[in-house]
Image 1 (cartoon, one colour):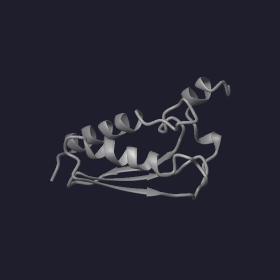
Image 2 (cartoon, helix red, strand yellow):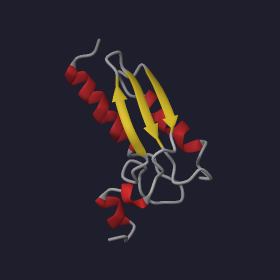
Image 3 (cartoon, one colour):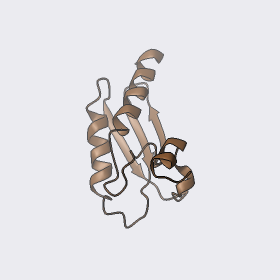
Image 4 (cartoon, one colour):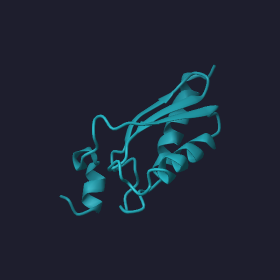
Length: 107
């Protein structure tokens, strides 16, 4: 059983790891793009992630989730990664952070 501080540290490290993953067609990380819908760190170190893709036909549909899973699994204290691709709600550009919109010239 992990302490609250350990859970918080793992959560922060998960976000950091996810921010190093980029959609190959868009020069913004997938966290800022709004593709990550949920991150949950369980008391045993298991991490559950719900994410989406910009479209069901995304060319990175296989590689991007695998990259996220791999990077999160390498974090100290993570005992497993359960990653679900979800399509509801569908992704729209409105899910992007202000920083992502600025980077892409959408402001």
